Image (cartoon, rainbow, N blue to C red; front, side, top):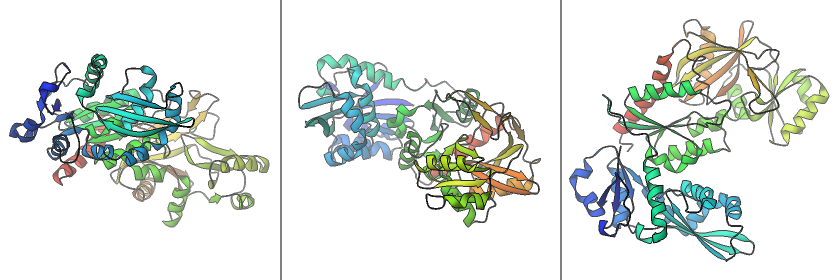
Length: 490
């Protein structure tokens, strides 16, 4: 993908950034050659973004041409409203107070260049503001009221507003930003789409291991998609991409959900989509959903402070208690005595008004059926961790855990009733990528949970399909991107 810097007047452009084409705004808007170009990122650094100005039309027409404007028009509109700016940034109060604690005056200006500031102390605040209002050059204005700092406004600035002593830093920041993508490699297939894969390099239990991530990249590139692995710091870059694949453990009150929401709002193809994250991350919702559609689950009781006495009569002991947003065997406890039950219920109800109590069904393994695009993808047996009642046994420390064995099973060999039940359950949530966990007890099957972010690890889930598994997942992205393009989605 080529990069263009579009400016009001190149003669007023003070920065010499290597390997970047600088184009006058009027030329970009009127020269048919630019309208016909594909795979272009447009860095709009015009002097003004006011409504119907040259700068405004550069971003507007870039979107219409299928280019990737930076900033986008919706960001420009946000920046034109001080009230909206304050609303968008209202959750940054803690970071603002921390960053500006040592400032002695009652007013402060923070210059943000491609998400960075010349003083490293302000980098975190700069990055967070940039993530919320992604524009190349910003200036934030703060006022102190009493002992608290507040944002008065944030404005986009022109290159001519950069102080001379900052210009070298800005050139480096811009160069670093432009080179954030891996250099394109000449391939037989010219990439048609840009796919971002969100991951957390520090997660000890990621949904996909390093080898699987390389397999996803290889499969996507073979289908004509360019892949970039991104992290939580890249929130402001989402508009650069056509699709987002979340390979990071998802939660609702978490950056993964914000990434999904933002990507969906920007028109990207997203897996996991925000609705799937909302629904699958709440076991109270899933319990109600399964009951309503008469899908067998272990005996279940929604517990609150007024019905704790009903747990033992309804479920007997031992039973399983789950906090609504539990995952990876965390937030799930087996209780065997009444005293243990009351203690754990009190602990969980301190975090949530409702929790889930379920009948304990001991099995040697759980079935995991992965569903994608309303079709079965793969099947595995997840065996319990040695000497433990769950698939994962966690120790005291974050990286201290033991997993049971994963055994992949072909779709043809899996019990049809297991696959059918998993498909029915997942289809109640949506058309994303789901992992449905099912216990088979005697001749009966019970849905345990539906995961929106199922594991796909090289050496485990891919043991039967191998490369084909990654190809199938990436093909779903490709088909959705093609359909969106044909429908005029961008």
